[in-house]
Image (cartoon, rainbow, N blue to C red; front, side, top):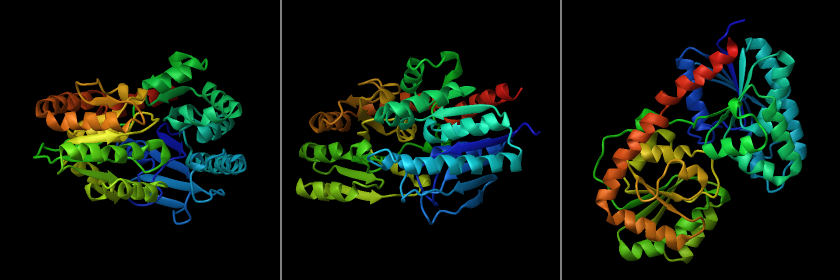
Length: 382
């Protein structure tokens, strides 16, 4: 059997051109394909308009069908066990077919629940090595919904040959569940070198590029706008992204009288993100929970000054007052104070820019990460 045929089984992958969901997994796939791996992707078909099969720059993508209801499982307020059951059954059948047809030599499941659970059965039935990448919600959110889901997560992780945790906090949680530390490697999802743009004149622009869903808590940023504008009347706030809360957030901005200072841009193509970040002085993430945020890494590489919530995934990258600011979650007044301080201090922003670019080159770029991922795969294929 060829030793370079790799299956990514992932619950998150771009559903349409320009889609953000799973864009880091797509980029990883493309880079591994460029490095000589035969790349096959199996992912759920969430939207009816998404193709069941497509080929993209040397990678092959299949989407298995299940009753999604037009949204991902994590977006349901209550765990949709019936939909998840169909998801698991369809995923197992589809993945077995692809593995046999394409003579896959190794499986990397992205997200522990439910795709990691699917991958356990497929890898055991076909005696294939299994890597599971834990991204965030699959460890930090879903297992907290019920004891049953936590047991499923532990069952899945125990049967992986190697586990990749995208942040130190996720690694520590997995270890606390009794998973041997020697099985766990901490590696973030990387970013593209296109983020390293020459520095340019920047305006008093505050940028958020998180989706407008509850977990990203963009409401806290909207509530901070008025206080920032009192100090910097010309400041503008650019909200890039879309989601279930967009209409409510636009209404909130109007109610607070700050709508003229806030530009809800919606989705933009991924390739435009570095250029957008290079225009602003401050990047804000108000997220309540995260793995390693690709958006934060892009901000660090682009030279914009980060002001982010003090969740563990961010404290791994940001030292408060040195290469960015941290603020307590759901505290718009304190967020506004940090934004004002950042806009006022040109020296702080300039020094942080140099530190952050060096940090990304060393730990966050694909050039640093892909060789380490390949080492994991090769060690399991020997």
